[in-house]
Image (cartoon, rainbow, N blue to C red; front, side, top):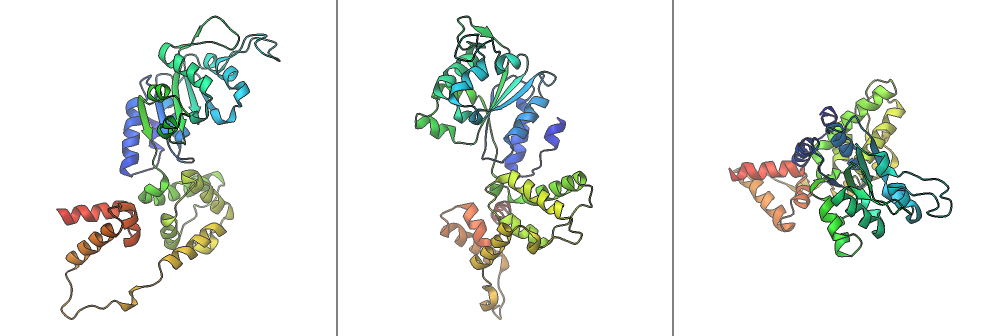
Length: 321
């Protein structure tokens, strides 16, 4: 699957995700992709389509949040002439247009409850009823859905049908947020800097080590999309020397200041005993102390120790061996 090879990530969660994409793609199984905004859900949906037996057939993407309640049913399932004011001709919906192919329903958590019921019927029988029609229609369509909200929590609140949730999540895929993939940030930055250098026909900009270090500490609320936008911004500046923190947009420069405030220089009072120290025992003690202070939260402990989550896991494993 060529498209899967373009998805950047060495984090264990990403490796498992891509393994499952390759496993699910050639089947007709319904896939539900979970992930925060900007994590790359559409890219994963595209990879599923490209690896499927339907890759040469229709592939239609629709953002459910962009459809108003008044038109979503007719947009998806179609409508017959006279079904409502303005319906002057029969209108085939997206299910008819995607017959033989794949329909990607992004932000499916936004679907109105009435439409959820019709979607469930289609998933169970392959049949649907256009608005104003009395004759059931049939379509051979694979459904890939995505949600940036916690659908399970939405089910508990009564905002999403439980039966539809279970029917959609036969083959779930979870995209981790970028803040949980710190070790992938450098890879992604280099990838997108090369990408935009090619796009704008410039020499690939080089990021200074302080920039890498700073951006690996960033929470990335916009995830990979935010990182991509930053790289394009930097490429457009056509900076020929290594890019430093002062070259970054103001929001990232402020990040540098806040990191300095949170982590002032504290090592000046440290002294080395005349008899020396056991570095192995010191490292083990610091890790235990950080985990105790954060009640076992590896993410928070890694911040206290100035390590990535993966580096902390590696050091803990090494100490246990």
